[in-house]
Amino acid sequence: MEALLGPLELLPQLLRGARITLQLTLLTAVLAFFLSFAVAFARNAPWKWLRYATVAYVEIFRGTSALVQLFFLFFILPAYGLSLPPMLTAIVALGLNMSAYGSEIVRGAIATVGQDQRDAARALGLTRVQTWRTVILPQAMVVALPSFGNLLIELLKATSLVSLITITELTFAGRQMVVTTGRDFEVWALVLVLYFAMAWPLSLLVARAEARAARFRR
Amino acid sequence: MSLKLAAIFRPAALVAAALAAAPGAAVAQDTLARITGEGSVRIGIANERPYGYVETDGTVAGAIPDIVRAALAPHGVTELEPQIVDFNALIPGLNADRFDIIAAGMYINPQRCEAIAFTNPLTRAGYGFAAKAGNPTGVHSVAEAVANPEVTVGTQTGSAQVEALASAGLPADRTVLFANATEALAGLRADRVDVIFFPGLELGALLATANDPSVERVTPFEQARTESGEPAYGYAAFGVRKGDEGLRDLLNTEIARLIESGELLEIISRYGYGEDELPTPGVTAESLCAG
Image 1: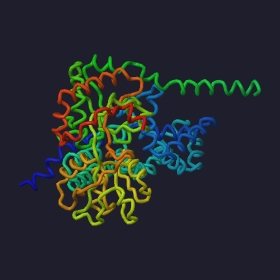
Image 2: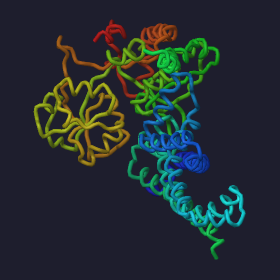
Image 3: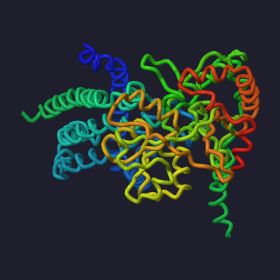
Image 4: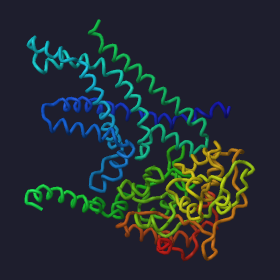
């Protein structure tokens, strides 16, 4: 009886952690998605200073550790008067970090749409906005989505970093349960299962989005 | 410097000056007035038994948070808001105003006194080893572990034990640092280290929770001695921000009262401490900060 009930009684606290992990993943994904496009567009902007700024943005947020970025935002900035609540800090830090990768995905995807198509669009009298909306972005999305899916799963797991800043997400909840119960095998096994249970539907979701984005090709 | 250069550097210098002046400004508000006004205090804990941890049902437990409760209740502060951080992040978190009191059983030592203010000690504790059943390497003191080049010792990063091991002469390549005690225990079980080195009380709580016959407390364990021949105890205290001396002084008065009345012993007894864990009379934050 004891053995059967054991793992189940660990579940409620871990599920609470898993909910935070999922919340954090989805909110960050939305922020990172839009930032990725914003940064990629800025990278194609006609102004040199803006292009340089985006290069710096990408290289800085991609080239430094996300863990250290979190630490900096949470523990160092308050000393300079900027104190964000933990959840917001996590979303901002992970969003900045992920968008640095994401913007490179978008940039690469945009580059796959050749100059010939842009020229053709202009020859047809499409405006700049129409060209982007109807020619470049639909094709770029098809290329970008598989990589975005990868990044989304990567983000789900990267949320475990935020235990550093007092947020009780899944990994932290697991560590907490090990301290209070000492049953490390069961706890970590459940944590693995829960991560997978979240990652799998996310993969399916992205696969569906890919199919949708490619519909125009049929 | 030419005029043009000066014009470029002036804003930069202003920003630098503003950045340099800003720390402290963020914590100008008086913490003592705030917590007594709100009736609640934010405490930083590292989720470690028996010091300060969160129960399965989410309530705050542990010897040190219970002492906070007893010390501040007479002043109308009845609510504890726990913030759980890695042990390493306790001092940064306190200084970033993420919480008001470190209630994690942190030991007073001179380096930490540079960064934060400590109250007078709440408890004292010796250290201990845990090893695989039967203690295969046969070490019974830190000195013996140092002397045997085959022995690796695990402990917690950022803790007082790291300094204790280093000053005993244990080389860095035989010191293995884990994030916390439960992970050190997992390391011991997985043969990543030969022994783990922790304050005796923490070790007791750790092994009791794990309830695993494959690991055991090393007995007898010979405590390290200070130069004067006394056992080298670690003294745990509350930590507060520098500048919150009002709060510290109030806590000191209350700690003295709780020790005097026997209430402190009663609290810590619930977590497996005994009379031997009461701080040595006359040992103060000041004397421990002086080294």
